[in-house]
Each structure stands twice: as structure tokens, then as C-alpha cells.
Amino acid sequence: MRKGSIIQLTALSLVAAAICTTVALAIPWLPVSAGREADRIHFVYWFTTIICISVFSVVAAVLVFSVWKFRAGPDDDSDGPPTHGHTQLEIVWTAIPAVLVTAISIVSAVVLAQNSNAGDKPLVVKVVGAQFAWTFTYPDGKTDKLAYGGHGGTKDAPQDYLWAVGYTVPVDYPTGAFNYKIEAKSVEGATGTFEPFKVSAAMLTIVPKGLDYPRN
Image (cartoon, helix red, strand yellow):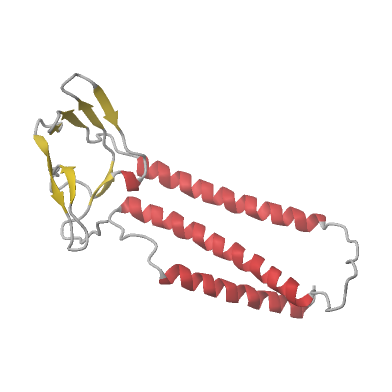
């Protein structure tokens, strides 16, 4: 490939990368981080995004360059010359995606393992459900009752009536997401267990005192 073509391809790749990077940074895709677990998830997101932008920029540049340089003339109805595939090129464009996908898998697996580690003493809350009441019992014997009432609501949207409970968290308890399990028992004796997915979005999160954490 001639030097001029390489320069043109590089310029097209940089333009595509600049546009994608601007879109990626200009829009607040992720919520405010409230713990180490969220920081790790954000890292995986941006790690994957950088790889995607890089691959897209190169592919887009090659497509635009090919349409620009090798387009047929207005009255050219002839077939293109028969060419054989390029073995080295095919190996390269197969190996590079394989390496990138493997890197994403490894990083994601490490972060998932770190975020799923609840420590040696995870918090276990026992829940007893009645028809119109729920009771939460903590390992130290303290209890909280679930209350039903209105939450939120604006002049344009009615209040949502939900079951809610307040958890007592020690002042020195570590911040971030933590693992928990809810065991419920009805007055008829039926039992059930709820365990959240092992990702921060499904787990309870303790934020530092004074942090304005967004609520959806």
C-alpha cells in the first residue's frame, strides 16, 4: 500500500474516532459512582467502549476509503478482476478480534469476582411476611417493620404506593454494595428466599454520609 493511502486511512480513522469519542464523553451514560464496585464496573464499561471505538474507527475508515477510491465509473458495468483471498490478512483480522474479546472477558470476570465477594461475614436479614405487614430481623436481634405508604409524586405524576423499610446501618460499616439474602415466611407457613443478582445494580449500596446519591 502506498504511503499516501496509509496517511488517508489514518486521517479517516482519527476523524471517526474523534466523533465517537465526543459522543461517548458528552453524554452522561453512567450514574454517579458510590463505591468501589461501581468504579470497577465503570472501568469495564470504558475499557470495552475504547476497544469498540477503535475497531469501529478502523472499519469505518476502510469502508469510506474503499467507496471513495475504488468506486466504479458512471458507465462502467464490467465485473471486477478475479482475486484470491489474502491469507495473512484473514489471519490478522481473525486474531485481533479474538484477542480483544478475550481481554474483555478476562477483565469482566475479574470485576465480577471482586464485586461478588461479600466478605467473611455477609449480612443476613430474616424476613417474615404477613398479609399487611413485613418484619425484618437482623443478626443482632433488632427488627424493622415494612410500612405501606406513598412515595415521591409530583404535580404531573401521582404518588407511588410502595412497601418500604428503613435499614439500620452502623456508622463504621464499609461503603459500597454488599451481599444480602432475604428469607420470607407467610402466616400460612410458606417460605421463600430472595437473593439479588451478583452485580452492584441489584444489590443494596451504602454510600458515604453526605453524598448526594441520585435516585431514579
